[in-house]
Amino acid sequence: MNENLDLKESSLFGKKDKPLIISGPCSAESEKQVLETARSLKEIGIKVFRAGIWKPRTRPGTFEGLGSVALPWLRRVKEETGMLTAIEVANIWHIKEALNHDIDILWVGARTTANPFAVQELADGMRGIDKPVFVKNPINPDIELWIGALERMNKAGIKNLAAIHRGFSFYGQSPYRNLPQWEIPVELKRRVPDLPVITDPSHISGNRKLIFGIAQTALDLDFSGLFIESHYRPEEALSDKDQQLSPDDLKNVLSGLIHRKSEIVNTRKMEELNEYRRQIDQWDDELIRVLNNRLAISEKIGHYKKKENITILQTNRWSEILEDRLSKARKMGMSDRFITQLFKNIHQESISFQNRVMN
Ligand code: PEP
Ligand code: MN
Image 1 (cartoon, helix red, strand yellow):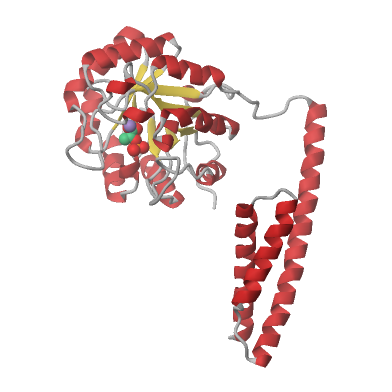
Image 2: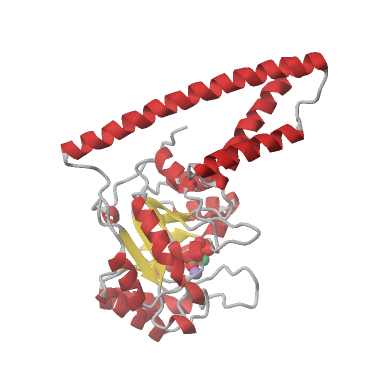
């Protein structure tokens, strides 16, 4: 499916090789913190300043933002530095307050995107507003919900849209606070090619040490920008302390990033790449043929099992297959994870085939 969003080209995302960098504190905590952070960010060339005014915290009793009293500080940031300002809005009141204080960009938070009632209310509240709106992915890995939220905004007349990839919730352990699941924003780019996608390495990582790697991956995937939390004194931050960068550290992260070209201009190099791609295409054709042959044999086995009245799943045989394929693939340097996933899928499809034969 290809979505038809009616989008307007935004000057925020002008240059292909110049990703938009948005930065600022998780939360606006004091006038001094906001202004000092903004001044340092301005010095390192940041053009858009973010700050949380109302904070959707997981547990009550943690810092939930200062609310409207912090909005005049953002106006000062604009006046003093010329940066654009961006805040999260989660209800109609937030939108009204943002408009009253000349906020330039509104974003929809991950918890809000997951709730179509809330998104529809926001979209209705934004009707007729000519400001960029960025929609974070929902906390659950559901691309339809993400696209649905963008569609609701778009149907309300908002054409200056972008998506923010901030990772997905999970239960268990991981080096990340939220799993990046890159395949989801990549699929979003495929389905809505004109929509800029920005990555938020701060909320993906939850840890400032991991920000660089995530940011580099986003650039390597040709995403349109980065959304990174920064604080003039990260160690004193009232929310998301471990993931905020000082403006100096942000400068280092940004200057270390490698910007690759999204297209090859040199035709000789293009020919080289095309030759590799032709080879990949051929191998993929071969893969499909091989898989089809394998499934045809599975089907024959299905008929045999039916005739002899034996169960489809033979656990020993399946363990043997997996062990054997893993040990062969290991010798060629392929990862256990890859081979296990691949053979689980192949085995599952064989079972489905035999199920059809038998029942
Ligand atoms: C934020 O950007 O400060 C925030 C609350 O993010 P998310 O909605 O991604 O959790
Ligand atoms: Mn935060």
